[in-house]
Image (cartoon, rainbow, N blue to C red; front, side, top):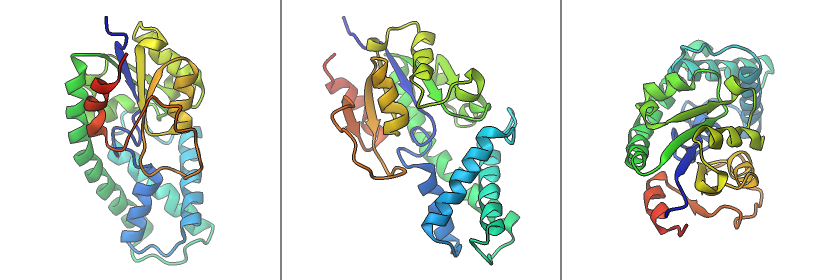
Length: 242
């Protein structure tokens, strides 16, 4: 009898960008639009924006991902100007934020078109769950990208009051599928927020290793497998002997 009965996916930077950290996705747009700032100042603005969105109800439960991206970009650009990290822009802040948001949104639409096919391929073979640190609108996001129908259970940090890397949020995901941790594989891009906590509760893990937040050394023997493209997931699942 097959031991693995369920898969739990992370969302952000896993399903929507195929392993690329969102800071890198946005930084690419800053450079393409020739925003005159250094990378360290951008990262500072990125952290500011993410913390603001986590602490304040800036995202409405009905907001789609384009609206989320507009908020992210505007928070970052306002912070950079207020802190005098950037003195002039080729476009007004609102116009530049809209341009960055639209470009990123189109990239995500393209990526999720591919990832949704991969997830749908696995749906008939496994129970599928999703565990995400998000803003209270993850179901709207998943519907926007034709992913909502793929998941039997969805655990969202702002709804359950637990955020990664707390292992308890992954335990909620496992329990929601009515499985044991050893029957579940967790797939995520973040070593610290996905792989470590999922391993801690006894799940198997597959690390989608792409361009992350930093390059500090980690124990690469901890995940059960490492992939660099979500398209490799069905193949690696067949090769794992459980």
